[in-house]
Structures are given as C-alpha cells and as structure tokens.
Amino acid sequence: MLKTVKTTLGWREWAALPTLGLPAIKVKIDTGARTSSLHAFRIKPFKTGGRKYVRFMVYPVQHEREVVVSCVAEVTDRRYIRDSSGRREFRYIIKSVIRMDGKNWEIEISLTNRAKMNFRMLLGRSAMRGMRIAPRRSFLLGKPDGEK
Image (cartoon, rainbow, N blue to C red; front, side):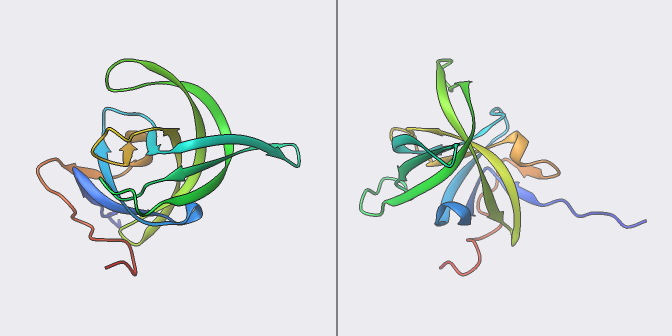
C-alpha cells in the first residue's frame, strides 16, 4: 500500500494566486479560520453575461504600498464572516487557484480590507485539507516557482 506524504506547512508560508495575477504573497496559516481571506480594497461588483464579478485591488507586499495589483474574479457567494475580534462582516467570496509546494488547487477566499493586519492573506483550514502544520516553523516550502 502506497503512503501519501502530507505537505507540512509552517505558521507562515509563501503562496501564489496565479488566477489573480499574484505571483507571491506571504500567507499566515490560520487553523482557527474556516475560510481563507485576502486583503482587498476598492472592491467593486459588476455583472457581465448574467454573472456576478468583483474588481478589486491588492497590496501583495506587507507594509508596502508601491506594488498594487488589480484583480477580477467571479463571485461565488456573499456571506457573513466573523473576524478575529468577533465582528461579523458581509463579504464577497471568490474561488482562486493557489500554488504552494509546486502544487495547485482551488480554494475559496473571502475579500476584506486587511490593511491593519500583518499578513495580506490568511489560509483557512478548509484550504489545507491533508496538510500538517508545524506551528514553530516558518517558510518550509520556500517561495513559489520562479520567484526569488
């Protein structure tokens, strides 16, 4: 019987969101959050062909406002998400491919302004099925393919 090797994540890692045009972003691993969340601002909904989309901006680098990426994604849901302070916020939910450790998979992401937070993205537990967490370690996977 073949044994599958689980990917081990540190408490923070690098990831890419290629479908959003984000080649590298620092991610905090958050087993307390069910849904992943991404820093987004200027979130503007629009419809095309009867489908709902959002256009939004992302500062992908912590504490840096020179690099800004414009993103567009289809809205898959809108729902209340409770933040770390216990406040409920009605957020847009999108799906995106995430790349970590040379592997790609689709995850669900809520969009919120994380400008005052240390990490531009949280990876929630629903996005890390089959993975192990090493809470005392960081950046075990290195940067995404092709990044320095």
